Image (cartoon, rainbow, N blue to C red; front, side):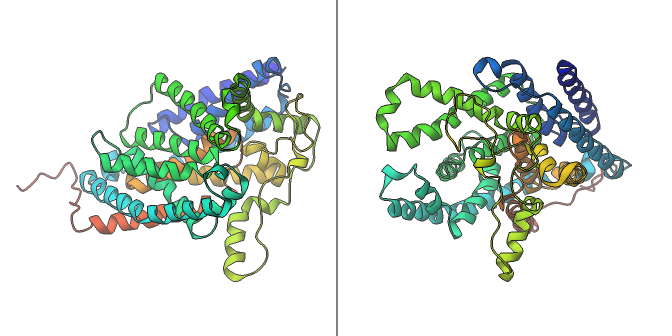
Length: 431
């Protein structure tokens, strides 16, 4: 029965992903970005987790994902039937003049990046000064000081800018490369692995869809290897300040490798353990899922305390039997698992329908402009990592949408005097 459930997941993902590709003419559809990483992680956990000392996967928990994925895909199918059919479906009628729009978008991204970099640099300097210098750069106090105030919003703005500049980079653009490296450095000091990895994944999605190209298997494997390097680098830098002698011990790097697997399997195995133990509560009330919008309302009108999303560690699941720490449980339950526990089965399906509508609409709007594609790439990267956590309960979700909208308006206005009208192919030129 266990193999039948895992096989059913694989069959569903393979079949629906091919249908999605035929409907939307790209492999980077929301369903594929959500389903394939989860499927790979689940199969690896099912086959190898016990052998590496982790708990075994509870296959009935996968059934909830199978249903959630089907609902998500069905929403995309409806969006295709409603918005992507008819005589105006041709690519040419949806495109703008790329030569002029690309130039204006790059200028806007470069100018805004240069404008916020002094703010980010000053914030880094002040955060280091508040904790006693570089030796405390990996501490929790530094993280709190670094992600506080106006600079925290500048860091969030740096995410779409970095994705656009990485995705549109061409060989020889030294200024653009320098800006990208600076923005990655500022994002790196947040010490949030998900932020750094999602930026890289989003840039890959952006570049592939922008160029209407394909992503070879070799590059996918290189990207996975790069994710391990970036993952490990965060810990190496932190340890280099707190305990440099540990970097000379082989056990340290064995711990990094095992912790990487722990990170990959945390979501699916924690949700698996919660379903195996028939756990009823994993965190706070249901409305924490919508905390970004509630917090905006409360902060604007001073209507109450700020909500903090995420489940407490004491309610987390222990997926590693060798762990003896009292608060060492895992409090991430994948995207669909989190929705299932917070809002129930029906609520989770409604939320998946809403997200499916948003993601597939953005997929169809990706040719309307560069920043629409950037926004789709950011949300797509969060879908990729949905095997780990639900990433839409943070302020970064609505804030990134607002920033992309504002950048799109700036790019449109800066190019409105130079953009040429798009003529129908059937109309011959007078010149």
